[in-house]
Amino acid sequence: MTFGADLDAAHWLRRWDAQQERYVPDREELFALALDVVARLAGTPGRVLDLACGPGSFAARAAARWSGAEVVGVDVDPVMLELARRTTGERVHWVDADLSGPGWVAAVGGPFDAAVSATALHWLPETALPDLAARLASVLRPGGVFVDVDTLLADPAAPRLAALTLELRHERTDRGLVTGEDFRTWWDALADEPGLDGLFAERARRFADRPTGGSSLRAWEDALRGAGFVEVATLTQVFDRRTLVAIR
Image (cartoon, rainbow, N blue to C red):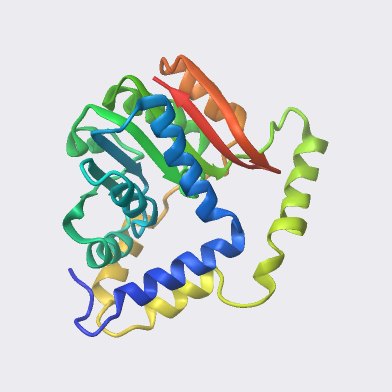
């Protein structure tokens, strides 16, 4: 399954990046910071893994920064993967696999010096995190680093503070959404492009009845430490949008 021949994939990637910045206004700076963290903790990486890579925004930046590195992007969304292939091309090795199961480990190979992810893994339910963390640990070399830029909810054991954190994030950092394109309207517009029916049908099949999350920082910390990561900490935070770093 491929995009229609007349689709301008680069245009759709630019629109994706623009609408994502409405949710995370400092998104570009956070990408750069995450790559700086990799360099500081793991040195110049030979292999980098982008988990739930989407259309390849993070993977493309890693590939541009480290021209000699092998960069692998893994995702289960066929629409996003085709968009990634059409824009970044073969500079990144794209893997079609589901992070909620074990098969992706063999599909991506290992070991990696670093793994990164951005605004994606929060879709996983908390019950899936221990297995994901253990599989991630198995593909990272000792001393390798994982950097996740994502919305990780405040500790539900402090319910009033957790609710306030969520409320303030919506008020203070989502205000750009009142105008322009957002996540849902981007998807609706792309679905209207001719020649994409097969890809969207496959996407609907894969995501039917799939549990989704909203995972907390505490659940992530527990899962990573339980998987053997020796250091786990939040590097940056604006409300519940965090840069979480773990060292294998």
